[in-house]
Image (cartoon, rainbow, N blue to C red; front, side):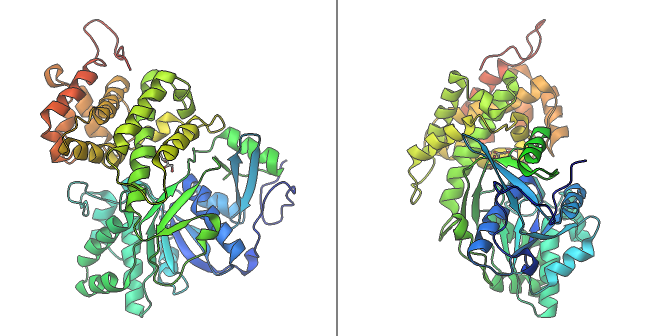
Length: 480
Ligand code: CS2
């Protein structure tokens, strides 16, 4: 029987390992969201930082609901491998920065004990857009969000990320411990500012003094994160076994590229993440906007082109010249909504994106990116559409993505999205005279500017029409 990766494993010399003494590593960071992205991004940067400048920056990894990755980490002494698909070969690195692991749904008290502990200086998050409980129309708390509603009702027994952060801060305030820095690593524009507002709004409901204390002493830096990390598959685990000589249930595959731009605003220090290539900037928002609109916006386009054309992976879409041309057109339209970004040559950035999407070693499923689209479209597509219309443009490239998204809903009658019931209901209620009207009528989904943009909605309709089942014909006979 093949053994499992652990601190006793003798790894082949070709495998990179932590270049610091794990035994001496104390906790400094609580991280929420033990998904593939965190394991291949922030944890890798932290490993680089510790190798360069050792300090107590061990990560306590918290998964909010599922105990599975937590159990897998426990079985492997916190170790797992990241496999980087280089052009010539795969390269494996074992990451050792995770020193404790907790499933919050099973062990809330332990999470709160860490959050209250003065040794914890930073709380980081990769919980995905839908876990924030953000109401996109107000920019504030969505009090109907299940975790937000539960945590407002019962703040001492939090269930969601914002609830845990607030309760942790309340405990520190009561004990005279300074606050931790809260660092969002999710794909939301101005993610730090958004999270700060949500935390303050939740804290406000319990104690005005707590709000004042957090507002005065806390820090919520913004950060732009980037690395394409597909969900792991059996093939990933097989590759890991071949490279490591042992089983690794948490192995993940990713691309060589990684980027992290962070606002340098930390209350009590931080790891030397720059050792891994992280860039510290005064203003991160232009970088976030560029990445969300050029990379993630194109991803959402590619995802739906893939779904509608039966193309399973991003790289498959990128083998079809006509579809690549659509992606390039999209990038051009998105670029027009951006201000210059310091140190970035946008033409080079776009070329690099096309290469990254086409990387034959990265098996990124289009259906994975299409997941939670209702949470992704606002920052990726709606905002640049609103800005383009305001400047007198026709925003047709953004109408195209919206039409494809609706077409995929109508032709598939399925999606993985927190708003799934409303989306499928809208897909069932299509009125051929105004095909997208049922989607535009979903409360709080589209910004008012787009709801009012009749000509733009007609563009969406014209395209969506082509995907509607014609009398006597099967659905999905449209064109791309
Ligand atoms: C993707 C992102 O699934 C998605 O929505 O667009 O996860 C993307 O791969 C990362 O943001 C890349 O940094």
